[in-house]
Length: 134
Image (cartoon, rainbow, N blue to C red; front, side, top):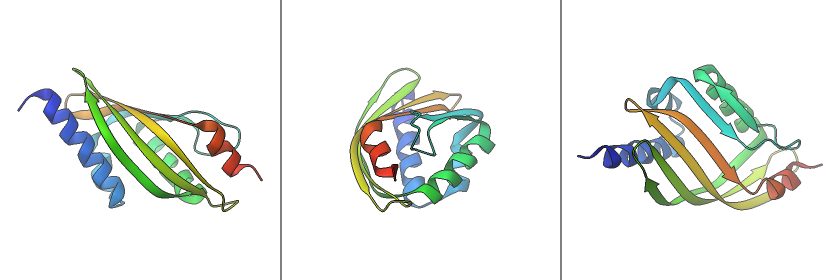
């Protein structure tokens, strides 16, 4: 099996673990020095970059209390020697306002030694920020 196929399999496993809310499996896929980031936005409490397993767990905790993920649909995966770009669509509800927003996304996942060492999310921060804005 090629490393590119292994990378895609690992990223697919990550999305399955998220769907199952299996945090311990997710942690097992992440390197100890993981960088987990999404665009900063003054209204989105989960924005910014967090490092290490403790930073990832902080992001999960903030996200769990801030929004409900209604749809997270990866639609295409493109791979390179050390990364996978995931193109998809998401639909979320800001818990504080009850507003729902939708956006296409790109997740850029970088791998090293069979683990995810960087996860960077790109999406429409304007529509997300408006959903969180009181």
